[in-house]
Image 1 (spheres, rainbow, N blue to C red):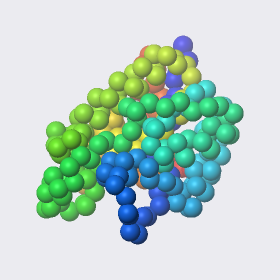
Image 2: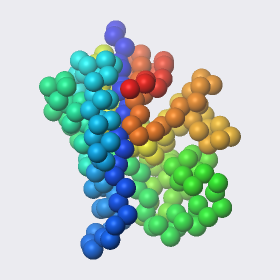
Image 3: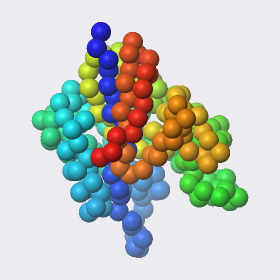
Length: 209
């Protein structure tokens, strides 16, 4: 039986929007519509040219704009359409005041890293690391059953990827993930190669793009 390979990808860099926002959209809607920066578009194109992402069998993406904008280059290189699943979306931050209180005494200033240490924490209307891990695992398990022996690209988000990897990694004292004593940096963009045999992970590594 052939191994199943999942390329778990964090979207490319997004644009920094610091101008006036005359809009009635709530924070969640604004977050979902974030677009790639000019550099992010270049990163996504370069990422799609990586030899590991050639001859992909199927592509799945979050339905957030930045994830789809990253997926489009991989789809184009492989002459495929990408599929969408909301379980790949970023974890919902929920109430911003609750999040600000949680981060008040934290050193990293990165909520997704801090939530690795507090996987049960969530804001009002938000998701915990454990909540996100559950839906990500549900999706990946379905993919492993449906596309056994295939090469699959999955485009998601920093927090959701980190929380999914809690199933296989430990969190070190710097609040970074480690797999087999090797630290994983989940930057934008990021390309992770996961090899599954009989639906069990046998290796996980970051691929330089």
